Length: 325
Image (tube, rainbow, N blue to C red; front, side, top):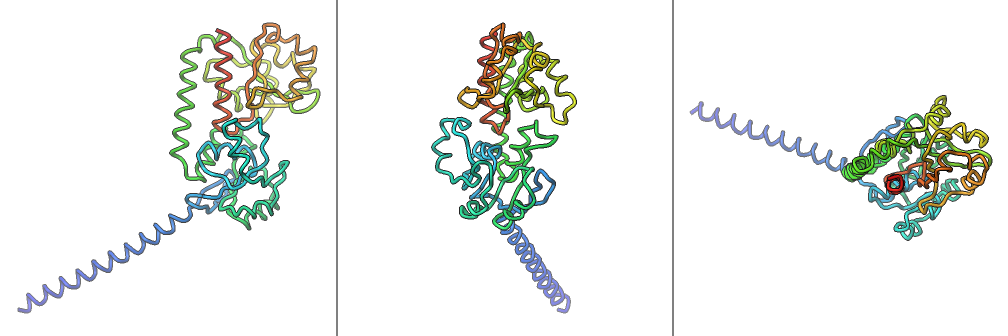
């Protein structure tokens, strides 16, 4: 009898202990789930830990480098920096026009940001501390890479945005599609590309042009297609921390004269800015090998904000390769 009572008592105690353990575990999991469903902690481009919404619903960007990335990733925007219409794909113009501008002329309006009630604010890693402090009072602020040693890796910038938005699956799809398109062009036109030396220029102020090295944003798009980069251009940017630099117009031939194919910066309608037009009006420009061979082409935006810019550049590259064929 004592033996049976002892076994019964042990069984009751064991059952109670198990129930307590399950309850405790359930409570912890519930709390973790509840916490996880609300916020998560990410590391931004500066190394700062930022607590952000798990699935942001009202995102504000103060710079177009993030605006395009957010839209590419399929997330709605509550506020944006000012956009130039010709720098936006035609099929996005209506959507862009409906989004409040919180950074007109590149200057962030803190009151305008607060008015749209964001739950996440994306700013470039060159934002001043005073502005950061003001924005952090409104919503979590995440700094993405705009300048610095990683600037050339435009896909990393999109990866940073995808991380904070929790949209890595969408990012993976975009990356696969882009790589496949590069591989297809390389397969079709690689032999043609290898027969040519290429240079890419922009222009953003009078009497100068901008030289883009092969290890910068434009290079990540064009090099996989098989092009040989201009050795003279590479030499011109070799001393720079970032492989790009502003060069005096008088050094145009010295810098890109060895290229038989020249690409130049445009908007997403294929139109160059006034500074590029001035370069093209120069007698020095007429002496370039690529100009004499009539192998000068529009590239698109040389500052790649996201997959939209990169896809447009690939479209232009395909036209170049088709023409060279």
